[in-house]
Length: 227
Image (tube, rainbow, N blue to C red; front, side):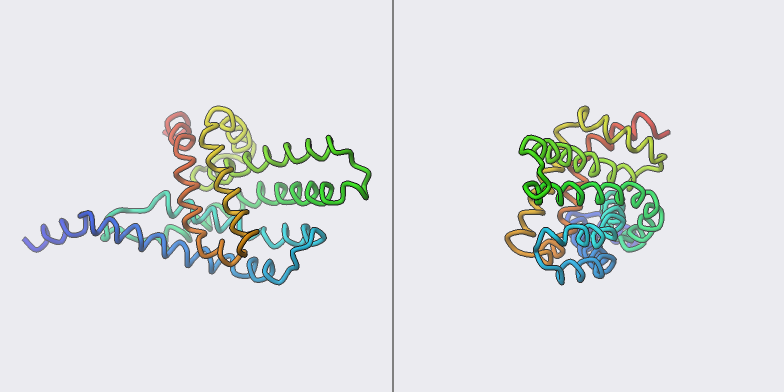
């Protein structure tokens, strides 16, 4: 009788809400922990375009941390008896750090180069149309990078396969890609109008949004490539 009562309590609506809140708070705390050095350095940097390369360097630890958050949120449990978000986070961090950095590092480097060129367009003699084209390419690269981050976090594919699947789903799952970019724009807006610290305090919510925005893509990949 006692075992049955405990099972009902652990699987009820209140328990599911409690499990969700606990998971999100745990993921938030671990995201803050693993990105603390990066955010500390970013907060010390002046908001000047000359600091774009340094900002990109500081952002390197954010990729693996977000990947671990994606893994933990995606594999979260609704029952209190199976609730281990911290273990899932660290498992995702260890499993994905190398694969994420292989994609995250060149993406940040490319975005830093584009940012420097566009912000110093007149000094470099770059025409307006070329700067606009660079921004368009950068936007596509960001959308591709978000797809790649999600795929790397949740699946064990080779880097070149991740790159291909990310590009394919930019068109195949364009609604999800648009939702991902919208989340990124929102994150940039929070950073510009408030600060990086405010964004950090809502990091787990952005990770949750990224998981849900990518659901169509991940479901299709799982159905087609995972046995």
